[in-house]
Image (cartoon, rainbow, N blue to C red; front, side):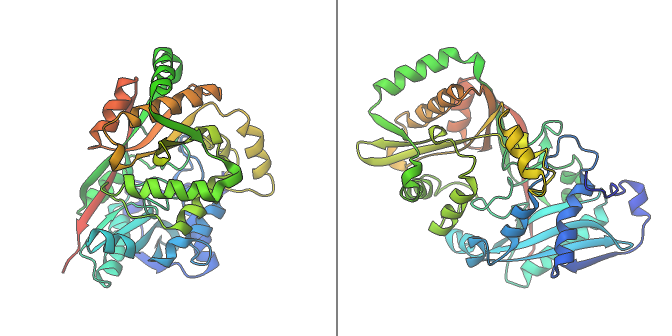
Length: 390
């Protein structure tokens, strides 16, 4: 792995020395902040190392548009001079203004199995947000629902399954650490598992429904990517407006996301739906690049990129990443058409299974639509929150 020894857990940590917390200000501290994950997950075969460069760029105000409407501060916890935990406190002004809610967030949380370390980290983030007028803290959010390094929440089940592209993975004890620090459930997010080879009947149904539908669908046009990204931004902001955790995505954010995803996007797996000439919905699926990323161990150089490209040829699963239907066109079956069409195109790409994620626990229309075509929940992520008003 990284060459670092796994961190101690359990009672051995509790007997260790005092905890110190340091803000991440130097390059050496940032490297320690990032590399801590390699120590936490050294013995976890399901974990897939994120690309170190992606984390550095996302945390860099000069390289990521999130920072134009947000403020963050990252912290490291130490025991006896050894990193034992990390956290990022997040003030997202767009969320505050859109929801008219004085809520801040924490993210990129990692900790040894020690409530004292977790409490020290969370308390530091709480104090940082409280000093800026926040009355609630929520998370983990990494860094927002629009700017995800990986998905929100900590795993509640499905620990033995490797995460899919842009989805998170955490140890089983994280929920207990948060609860012991006074945090309670805010929202559960689900990942649905789909087995495509078992749905030939549904694929035939999709062909008939799509042929009869008044909606027109077309794949992403890579030659006019900027224009299509603007259309997707319009649909996304309209269709997700009332969803939990939503904040409007800026033009800069969605263009940044499109640039990140461009190397892995398959145009036929990103479909835009129209009602006559009006954009009405879209669905984006991605091959599960994590199946190749796990061989890079977080680094593109000197051999990581070669390994990714080599193993990318053998990807056998996909993730349905996002789907949106504008309010005007809901209740007309477009969501079901987009789901069915997504799996039809995934099957045509030679992929026959994967996940749909993440789905809010109270998004009953989407859950029912997935269950009708054989999907079932196989992972649950939980976002926590805590009042922090003085």
